[in-house]
Length: 222
Image 1 (cartoon, one colour):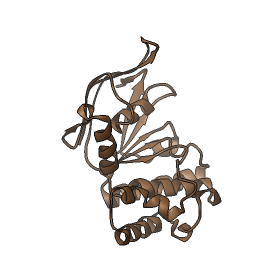
Image 2: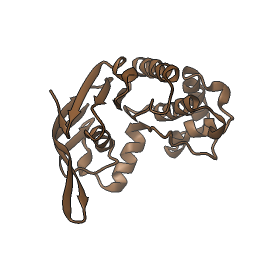
Image 3: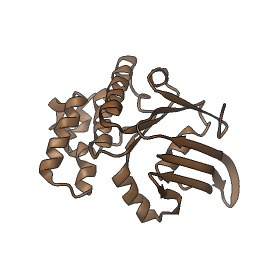
């Protein structure tokens, strides 16, 4: 469902190429994968995740998602594509502080123009699976780190995207909450059929995924 062909990404200083972050990446991901991009800090895993998610442009190559060449889309088209097809879970949670848990979870669906009744039903469904249904009226700052990350996961999957991209989702969690989050995300992957791709070096994620793609110095390592 996701195809990467000869993907290269540079970071520039002025007009000169400073860092060759991704080097001729060729990769395929099937629907329903539960996959880890692993490697040491600076290996390119977050850059690759951002490229797949159309958050960062690439310098050459193609990224095709569900038959759509995302590298050929305009900036506005990429915004719409992300909203309709991709969910994101970030290390820093990125919740809207003035919105309640329920409003944060339903935020993407609201942008999609979905009816309030359907949003409310879906919010309650995913919040129950992630054991945060008792916190729907709370503001993010009144939650623990583990609860905030579960809200972020709920928001990512609520609109039923085909792909969820998770960048270091357990980095700010203790071991108990890391394992708990992974158990929940694995169940969501199996129950909802959503492809989940992690970028992390966390052992808790490594022990739970079905596939590991190792990166070294911007390349896929064998």
